Image (cartoon, rainbow, N blue to C red; front, side):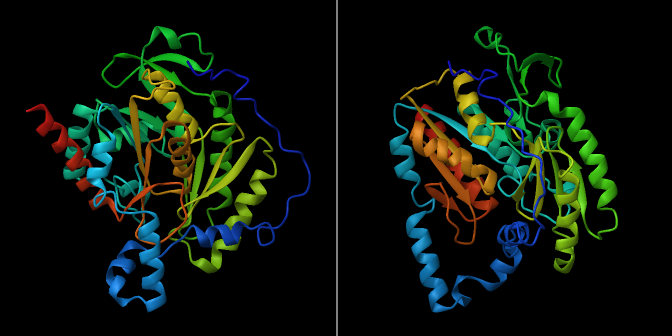
Length: 348
């Protein structure tokens, strides 16, 4: 079994000292690069409206990251005599990216597709949202849930895991005993304090929204005028000066504050596979579908150790550790539906 002991989770401390201004330390460039055109704009434009150079670039990108739908039979063939395990991001994968994160609802058809897949394969959702929130949005009891970018994982009780210091026993929404793996538990008071501070410091920035995801906090700037991005970034920058054990990362039009620990979605995937009994197994085919920078750590793990498939959800060309791509959430739903139907046909 993988050793997720305290030695793996040592918390490196930032060296105190002066931090650079947000303009010189790359924050603004990162904010812009993580803010692609909306899918509505992309769809309205259409590939046929791109310049010849853009069309050529898109074709080259699709050659490098072919459609998982067009490559479906290749994936199925590779899965023969293997146990498929499905990992899914939430926002931008199961639910479209929307202006208000509180309204990022999963459709009934998508929920049905996820439920059908979970009938045949172990299925986990690994989200940056809090575990409780993503469970509330999805509402399927047959899944594994990992919130806060994998820093809060709920899984069934297993005796071989009980010696792990980061595991605690709890109960799920149905009152059933479960294990919670929370490697950043000691940071809970700090994250709560930073969340309240960020709410106060950003309240004058119109459109900014701060969320507490339990083991991390996020500052959304999707509805903030781009001219105000430097002000918002400086607010977050100044708050983090007082917290050397926290770091800031970038998502899709969101600044995320999280503990400085050696843990990410890739580590969460490894932990879940290990918990399911697939440590160093050649009989497993993990498939991870996600759209965000934080999913790249999981893509990298699957590409390396497990020979699995990372599938990037994106309608615009960007470099990735994924192997395949899907254009949007509707293609994700189609892919999941095809997987479930293939299994049903094989069982008939």
